[in-house]
Every structure is written in C-alpha cells, then in structure tokens.
Amino acid sequence: MDFYFILGLDSLEALRSWYRPDLLLSRAVILCALRAPEVSGNEKRSAGHCGEVEGGSNDVTDEDRFHRAAAYLLDRYSEASPDIRRLHCPRVDMSSTRIRRMAAAGEDLSREVTPAVSSFIEAHGLYRN
Picture 1: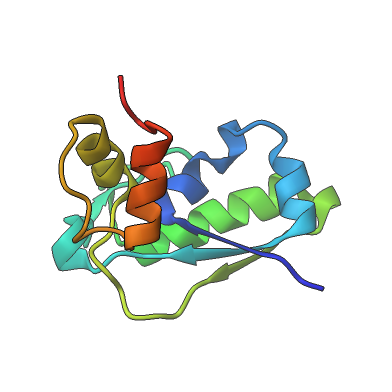
Picture 2 (picture 1 turned 30 degrees about the vertical axis):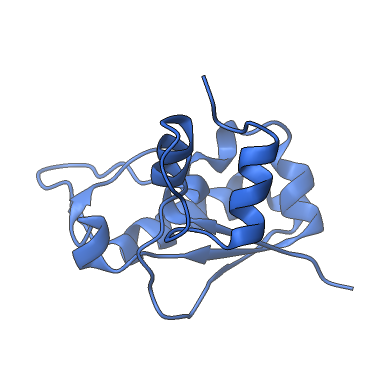
C-alpha cells in the first residue's frame, strides 16, 4: 500500500527543518501542489530555503523552486529513497497559513474548508491563541 503526503511548495522547501523528515520521505510519496501564480504572487519570486540562487537575479518560478527543493531533498535524504512528485491538478486558491490565521481570529471558515473540518477546528479550539 502506498501512502501519499500532499503539501504545498513552501512546506516542501521547509521539509528539511521538520522533525525526522527522513521517516516521512521513506514512508510516503510526497506530492507537491503549486498555487496559481496570479493567486500566490509567486509567478516569479526570490528562491528560499533549498533554492538559493547564486549570482545576479533571484527571480525564479514556482516550478523552478519545486525542482530545486526536490533535488535538495533527493540528494540529502538519498538513503530514504524519497519519491517526490509534482501534483498535477488545477491550481487552487488555498493557503493553510490563511486558514490558521482566520481560525485564530475566530473568522468564518465556511468558504475555505468543508463543514466537517470547520467543526473540528472549532470543537477543538485549534489555532486559537
């Protein structure tokens, strides 16, 4: 049985700072979803974490950032035999950071998540200060 772990580009770039990323990389296929450039503002943006750009320009596309982050993780955690793939799906306007901020502020999440997720967040007081 294969397990799939879906995350966004920022999370993929930060994966190396997570607790025991080697375990995740060895046990699940990593699927990275990108946001639409017009939504994320990241059509071209400065590379971060695993995608430092040398010499002049720091303008890179999200697709470039994905390839750099994946290459870094594949090299750094090669013993885990990671399988990192680009998730090919319609790009959506969804941000976990925005959802957490909205929940912390007590805002209505009904347009962002399903009713079950909204109820769970509310019932457990998630993301509240």
